[in-house]
Image (cartoon, rainbow, N blue to C red):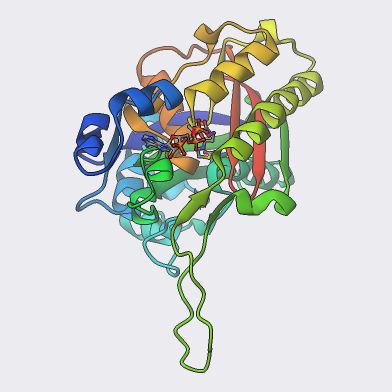
Length: 320
Ligand code: ACO
């Protein structure tokens, strides 16, 4: 038994914000942002919410898979920006799409979240508990940015990506994941303040902070080794892989991973130029763009890799 992706869907907010738009509200420039990150524009929510985008992405993925709501056993949303602490985004999706039989819960593994959700679904399938799942990465990161900190707020965007996965004869060939909590504070965002009047010293730092260079070093060392491990486990070589769909943090990270693996950058499709970094949603949105652009053919071997906050990482090799 393997876990196969049988349909994809995504949803981006309507409002496009270019680097030039940002340069009108803060001291930055298209030249600085695009040369260091590859990002040219991103979509940011106005009316949309994490749940509203997730519901649209889910319906598109189910339509693409030819699966109806009553076939879904499990809904997992990877997010750090659910609209509510409770109910979970996945429970909101369940109600909206009418997947009454499904068990629904959210997980937090930041930018690796979609990969972790894939692995959880795979474990359920292998144990025989469930057969069909809807897994998502969905974020409204613009809500947790410090818009006075130009070094972080220019990097991120909002959006949702979904995939329907099913127990099948082919699909996920190998998986690798890990966590390094000791380095967690290099990319952090504190939850709500404690406003209990008995607490003398309230917590600060409500918005996202990042040590960009430490995150860069983490990504360019961890991701190539994680990808090599999944390839070894699957008995494949880098030359056997048709595409590497990586978390869309930064073009320089992707270029460095390509160089370290000795693979042409052409095999690394990107969406970060028009999406920015959407944390857990990056990988499924990219996958949906690849799928809808006709890049993915049955039998192709694809590597997926997510990495980021926690710190966490997860890589998979799958047969499409
Ligand atoms: N516009 C103009 N200038 C800026 C901006 C901006 N948006 N942001 C920072 N600067 C300035 C800084 O103030 C600093 O100026 P100074 O030298 O006068 O002090 C200068 O640019 C250099 O700042 P650094 O933070 O050192 O910039 P760096 O070259 O490291 O680039 C970047 C920052 C692009 C984030 C880089 O560290 C990087 O690629 N990091 C990888 C991590 C990453 O991409 N994280 C994304 C999220 S994490 C994830 O998804 C895994």
